[in-house]
Amino acid sequence: MYRDISAAVMGSINMDIILKADRLPEVGENVLGSDYSYAFGGKGANQATGLVRLGARTKMIGKVGNDANGIRLTENLKNNNIDISGVATDGTSTGLAAILIDKDGRNRIIVYEGANTEIVPDDAKKYISDELDVLLVQFETNEEAVVSCVNEAIRKGIVTVVDCGPAKNFCLEKMQGVTIITPNENETESLTGIFPADEKSILTASRMLFERSKARYVVLKLGERGSSVYDGERLEIFPSYPARVLDTTAAGDSFTAALALEYVKSGDIRAAAVMGNKAGAIAVSRVGADASMPTAEELINYTTK
Ligand code: RIB
Image (cartoon, rainbow, N blue to C red; front, side, top):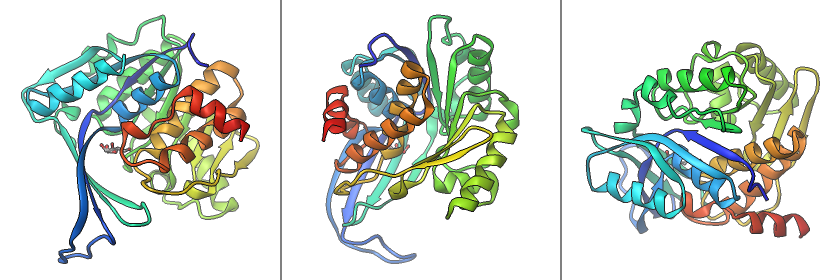
């Protein structure tokens, strides 16, 4: 489907520990869990897996610690046919995420960023090569590395897709002219002070993001409401697809990967948002992070349903 596309992700690589319980604990409370597992995660690595499953040639740029988790995560990326030449190793610990999931599939995540924040901007930038069609970044590494890689990609005319997770007030002004900026609801609120609750607030927040980043498109991920696209003139909302929600972890990552590839392939941001919604619907119906990324075949079949 997207086989001719060459993509890179500069982002985080984490070991996820997933704990399930009927409900999530209140402050100071101890609840009994029903299950736990370890999974390969990190927003960057999840998006790289999402891209490769959809058929793109994918390179990962990031950093893991010199420890057992770092080795396992790098092996997993390699086994997923991701080019790991841009993954460096550091003396600090590999990133770790503790993910709590309730019976309705809702989660709360605490991330220890570890080696992800030790990425050296000039080292990472070297992997933004001319043959790339698209670069994806998130905010789970350090700001300087994100800014440096995105600006290098813009300079080289590569499509840039900025996923704004996790929520933080990142200085968007430092990377003017990105192609697509795509925060979820909480990330939108962190960046603009506005929660995109209805059409009016979606438009106001999108306009602010558009101005701050000088992006070509602002695409908000609106959870069960779908996604919105703002191009500087018009706002459109694309409803989500029905799904049996088991775990929302990495739904945003699968959305971003599908959005990016469909945009590169067709140049149609609306078709890209629809594809992102489909990928998100598939991802929430599965447990785990990289394990929930759909394949190209699944996405095609989903469109025919
Ligand atoms: O987006 C989901 C990811 O966020 C998880 O895999 C976890 O590692 C956190 O980074």
